[in-house]
Image (cartoon, rainbow, N blue to C red; front, side, top):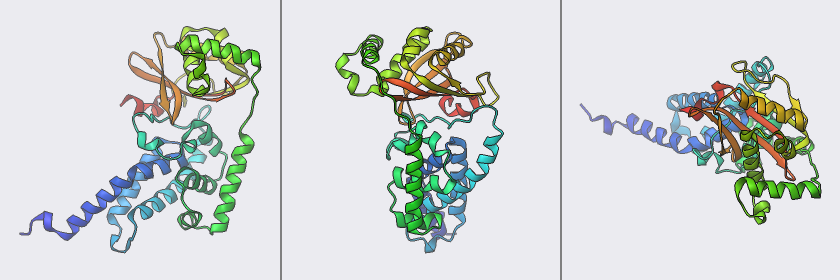
Amino acid sequence: MADDAQDPWTMDLREAEAAFRAARPRLFGIAYRILGSVSEADDVLQEVWIRWQTYDRSGVRNAEAFLATTTTRLAINVLQSARVRRESYVGPWLPEPVDTSADPALGAERGEALEVATLMLLERLTPTERASYVLREAFDYPYDEIAEIIGHSPASVRQLVSRARRHLADERRASVATAEHKRFLTAFVAAAVREDESRMGQDEHHLVVTAFGTAWESGDAGALSALLDPDVTALSDGGGNVRTARRPVRGASRTARFLIGVVARRPGVEMRSHAVNGRTGLVLRQEEVVVGVMSCGVRDGRITDVWLVLNPDKLRGWND
């Protein structure tokens, strides 16, 4: 009997598996950015692997291109049905946060399309607009390749990407911090993280979030409010599994009180700054279990948006 190691089909399947493993980080990155869900992205990749195993690979010239096309088309289909399910979701639906310190490959591509702020804006695009934007902006695919992947003409893809960019630009808010607030912020951040004031301009997002975590953990409502934009909006995702606000919380003082209440219901909770979707966020731990992950938008020294995931179903990857 011939040795299995010499069987042509066995060798071909091994090569197919190697090609899939090599492409998997990018495939997951595409699926996650389109869907905003780790579990749904994993399901897509499982289906891609099944199709790749059973496909006649003798006619495939570029395995990565084939796998990326299959992943994108499946993700578009999943997103269309997922949006129907999300309409009946209990409370606000937020993207499932990912730990980009544990998975550097996920954030290795262009980072903007991975940030929670962008994922939230992408929710307002059509599935084909979202897929086109992700492939172009996050992975730098040429327009003709995107056209082949989604089944549109290159001219149509250019329009889709352009329209997506306009939508995102229109949604982004700008705010101007006063000189007085800037002085307060620099002093507060320096005290909170024990850093030189000269570092403020180096990574404002990181320093503001770190200071915010210090104030939040201490229950200092005044310090929290001062770090929040007056028009801040906080969304919290409990998925009906944990108690949280089922509607957006707006305004600095209301948001500060709400966040302090979240911690008050979790005695002994600890906060640490952490890489969440490629930017600094906060991880809430209670007895070594991650019970919450917060991301936020920062502009001109103030937090403009808070996205707090408390749904344990969306935190499984953080506790594995």
